[in-house]
Image (cartoon, helix red, strand yellow):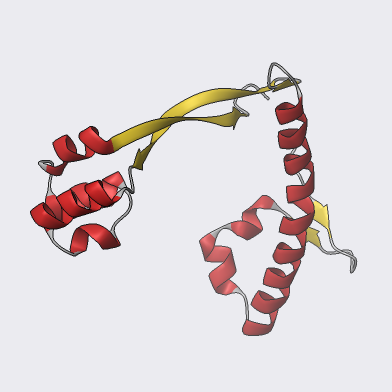
Length: 135
């Protein structure tokens, strides 16, 4: 199988095995800093083509670029932020309900019983994410 190999400006090969924890732990401090610097530079460069495909998919009416396409994911829960909602949550759950904005965090703090109260004031926003699985 062909594996991608990057070559640094000094002629050093960067292989997928070099990103494994054991290899990284084996580096000296100086080597670790140099490798991290290289990775940081590469990350910014490698993000450019991905962002370009995302831009193209958004511009296309059908949301498709080659084999990459948008697919629906779990809707995002948006909890109403009105004074009436704030007052109701404060009366029932206290100040902690104000610090937490996500449904998951509220359930973790107050248990599943809060789910019913959230459903009364929440709206759900459709979300989509690019699906790269067919590439």
